Length: 119
Image (cartoon, rainbow, N blue to C red):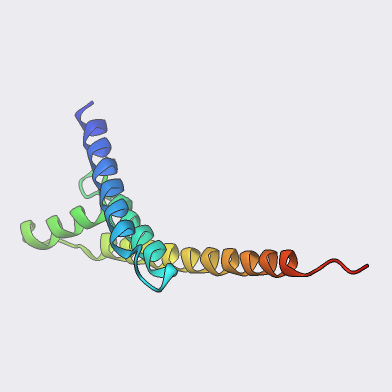
């Protein structure tokens, strides 16, 4: 049960952090920046990976990587870092694509609503 509470705390902290980044980046000229910063922050904190020597347990990939680097004499953080990197890359690409598609849709709607009907 403590395991579930830990993930609830991680989810809450990630949501608060992503919202904070959203608010900080809200005044940016680049709308993509706030979307990208928030999505990457969520992915960074919430990407799960199996805990070494505990195959039934998962933990955030960045936590496993830090633990493997700092506290294991023969730690192998490559697996968790690879999963984290792939996750961040995928989330970045999806966020960029969705952002540009939504911007394109908004522009086409605004240009079609600005056109005067022909008589």
